[in-house]
Length: 171
View 1 (tube, rainbow, N blue to C red):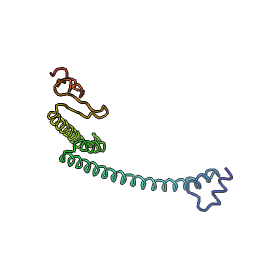
View 2 (view 1 turned 90 degrees about the horizontal axis):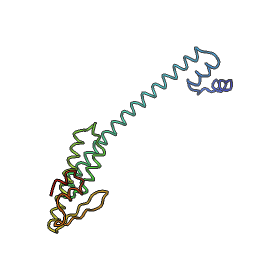
View 3 (view 1 turned 135 degrees about the vertical axis):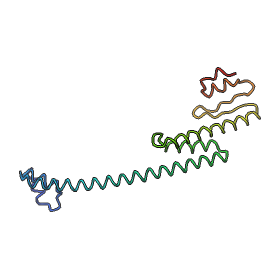
View 4 (view 1 turned 90 degrees about the vertical axis):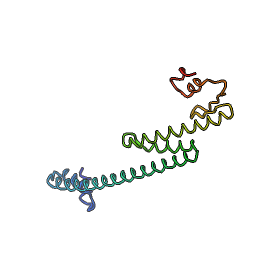
């Protein structure tokens, strides 16, 4: 302790906290309290500045996230209008990842709706094309393609392949 006290007393750039600890070690409690109070004030100023900076950073991140979500949503609608349903779904999914349900329930619901519309348009387009060819090919993410011969597969089997619980009641 004596070595620490001597080092602090010899260093004019020693912090108030070090000076408080050295004074306490020397049993100079009034000086320790004064230096500890100064150290606390400096730390409080630094803490407040850091909190303000963090608040500004959070606001900036939120604004950037909102702008990114709006841009991805517009990208999705644009791709959807161009008939690029797969790419539109990707854009809508990326926008949805930026949309916490609790914070933005309306935007979250609208994006789910857009994803559903995109999937429906893609299915209708694939079915229309398949009707002309005599078969249906569906891309199931993570499960590969499902190819059904229109004449050999009843509708219930098609819906069963899509995970519909009520598939057995049809056809």
